[in-house]
Image (cartoon, rainbow, N blue to C red; front, side, top):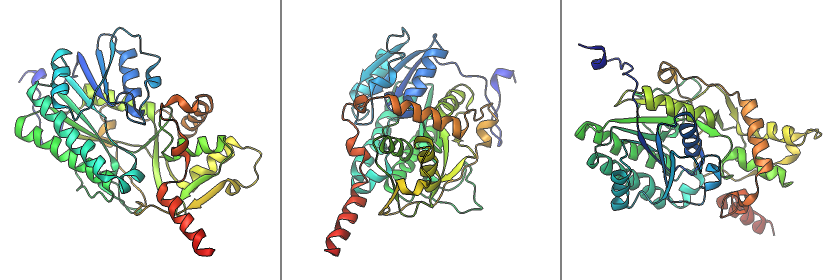
Length: 367
């Protein structure tokens, strides 16, 4: 058998490098995907990159300012729920590759507005994968999350073949979307690859997530607001490393496989808050003076822990340390205005509505 026709065995092998030509990135004006778009546009001028985004509250074309005039970049405003538009774009732009990153992602919001998560994450993915099948897409990379594995104990490290046990509405929709995408691989031979990533941080992230939220609150003279007692822990990986992981998987990933994108850097929420207080208020003696504890989520996973050994075998490794990434993040949020996102960020900086409501109810009970 010629080298270009490598046979897939029980142990997945790295196929010959895949070379795309016209790539559609969904959600490309959002956090992680904007970094993927930028790296692709800059590093691969022979690739045409189409950014397809409906411009939700957490998206911003400001994230793409450095590539907006590049000859190999195009932005199209559109919703993945529109089957006719999606198919039209795939055909007109001669798309051969899709990186599907568009999704509702904020876990807190999924507890109070879970129908929107099901619509966007599940139905939206179904619409997109059906269009991909009809248009003969050669590579479909579906972006998922480590939260599909559910919470884990100290001695458990998740690998790609583990059973999915999501514990919140957001994670459940991502697991459901994965199953739909996988079914198209099995039923229609659609060339699918799935990724599951750790908590990602860095520039361009709408400040509803813990690190950018704490940074912006501290810059405004507000305390960090921590759900529960702050003992929940997460692994944090810098967004530029994650974007490089997607590009590695794009070129070297094996069709039909899933890849975890993670790191060994793990901190509790209280650890992260204290680090940020020290970085932004170096003269403070006790960081706890700038931390406020609020009501917890309805359910808050204790920790996630995934193995990225499979991805590392493709040649990827984490390059940005947590401390370096944290400083880059702080510097970026310190200089960008609040209207970087059209809707502003004031509502995102408030404690979650559930926590705020619980606090107000407690105050009323005292009186």
